[in-house]
Length: 273
Image (tube, rainbow, N blue to C red):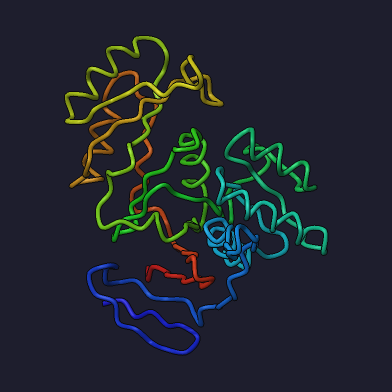
């Protein structure tokens, strides 16, 4: 059973998290401070959803130390981490980084983060990235932002993968979020038919009225499985299909999961390895 420690209380958690995991505490609490606007005599607090992502990202950046090589994730939550890293660099932090997408590269360069290539390093010390879903075993669905292949390459080269999410991304079982699968353009129609045989409703991702193109020049097929009973087995079955480059299932690769909540709290779990 997982023991989770907050600043004031200790809780025993049951089925929501598996055994063999421990918390890294104490949990840092922050006051909720979404923007307040006045509308028709009512105070409305906005921005709490984004604030939950921000506090999770800031907690993750605390792991980064001088001299590290850092993997930069992709997406709205990872963007908060990149911004925080840029802020710390201005304060004197010395790191080098590898980005998981062209968008993250552009943001990093704008913040003064030194980017390198794989030819300039042997291992990434830490990668901070988001996820579209995280299950009880810390299996992930990633790729909603279209960067799953580069994200998986960077994560696999990392000593520590820290996943940052808001509370809405925690699920008992993966599958409600359609699983992204990156495929080559040639013969993609046949690839879609073969994906359908695995029990999903596959759809070609489009942007406007054209197919979405990844940074690697490929298509993405979003596969609606409803629920994924055996993530590891499904991962391997999908990757055996000719034309598939990789899929958005990340199995047994996350070392830490940091969750930001709408009430301004942040909770962190760490695997015991």
